[in-house]
Image 1: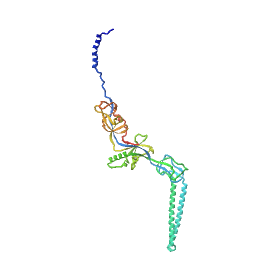
Image 2: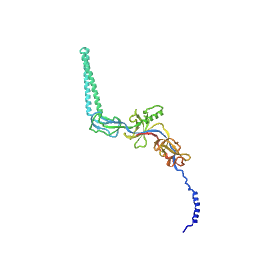
Image 3: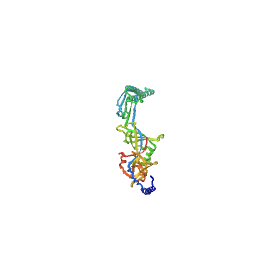
Image 4: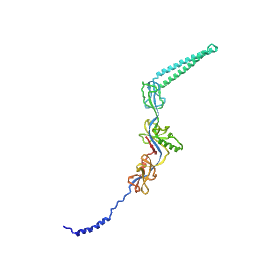
Length: 398
């Protein structure tokens, strides 16, 4: 079958209106809705700068009990790990040798006294004879010299008695301080050497010390802050008597409160630090010597600060920024200066105010100048806050 040209022409004549109609209509673009973002106002709180360090605990007093005489241990009179009082009897060293020495010294005193009595009688007799001219001067001098020598010997004998009594007292070893005593390091029957053999350890842990090293920078910062507060110059030792808080490895925060009671008089040039010591009460004995401790020292006066959640802060080539929603629900780019981080919140020192609405969720969906749909999350930041007042950390050292 052959197609006739007039049929094809009819088809082409009919097509242009169809194509013309299609070319005149464009598909409608869907309207873009404003993205939803979560916003919150900053958290405003009065805070106080601080420095933080780590150190270790030491007992207020620690004494190694040693004998002051040589001898054999006869007995001990305490239970290990119990609290004892100063002057309490701890060990008894065999007293018999020291009793013999005391008896001998007392007998020697009696002999010296008898010698003095004889010398005094001779001296009086010669003096009487001298009065009648029956004795020579040399006899008077001789008797007087013998009397003086006898008196000196008596004084030495009496000193020997006191020494023997002291040795007997030393043989009864007593506690030099109050505190908690360790186990006995020697058993009865052992020979102990004077000033050498350790018998036990006594630890006074009514209070504990925490030693830590403060950097030169922080020492100078504290000095400058104190000078600003008092209006007078103070050296680094001015940190003494300032409050301090302490927390152990397994504790939250800093539940123990004390004060700085010592600051070294000079910096260690090899480390660039100065040693500082804080004192903390320990009435229940839970703070054992040798524990790792975290120290917090507040510096300066409290001041109001603006804090935001850390995840709301963006970074643009090193510049920190926040996205703020204005009154027209438009996102604004704000450059900010940040301070210290505390419990997930970052101190903002410059760039926003306390009433600004900060985008805390959905930051990746917005650009500056974009309209947004804010959803209030006023409780979000507050929910991350601890119940107690905050102090900010300016430095943290190990």
